[in-house]
Amino acid sequence: DTGVSQNPRHKITKRGQNVTFRCDPISEHNRLYWYRQTLGQGPEFLTYFQNEAQLEKSRLLSDRFSAERPKGSFSTLEIQRTEQGDSAMYLCASSPQLLAGANNEQFFGPGTRLTVL
Amino acid sequence: ELKVEQNPLFLSMQEGKNYTIYCNYSTTSDRLYWYRQDPGKSLESLFVLLSNGAVKQEGRLMASLDTKARLSTLHITAAVHDLSATYFCAVLPGSYSGAGSYQLTFGKGTKLSVIP
Image 1 (cartoon, chains in turn red, purple):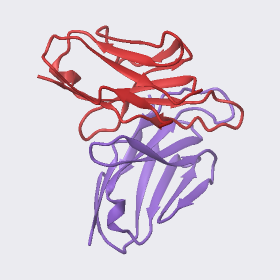
Image 2: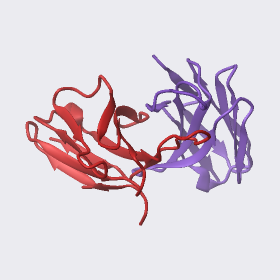
Image 3: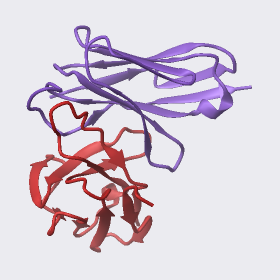
């Protein structure tokens, strides 16, 4: 499978616990994005990496959230001290580096559904 | 702050009928994307529209972009049940040919139900 993959697909945790999600982008895509989607809403941007550098962060990304992409390949998103409001689908996407004439289309993974009890 | 508005948010239509979903956005952009999402699933890319007047068609769906009006439309022709899903438009601010943000801003989605 050459698409974006995410693990785990589902995570149930108790309030106050830490959770970590992983995203593996499409090979050779050097841009990687994290979005959050709550029920009935469109996805909201969280952060974006170009290679290992985190270049944009949304104000939605509170201090309890941290994302890394240490070697410029897979990425992890960690949420510390989870709250019930963190319950959502966390989506990862990737795209190739924007070149002249490229469309910067973002390809999405299957998502990780987080439920905080 | 970029705002993206879709309407309608809910659409129930009979098989065989035509309808249009509208997507308005609030800032300069010539990069607009349409995605489909089935319940509990991720987003599937449908169309990429990159210039004023761009029109793309795939099967019963046709998308267009008017950058001057900051408006995109997704037209459904002779709807079939398999088209039932939620459709999102998403915008990247800035210009296709120059620098711009990489934050996709999504509309709230249009939930389409096609009834036999």
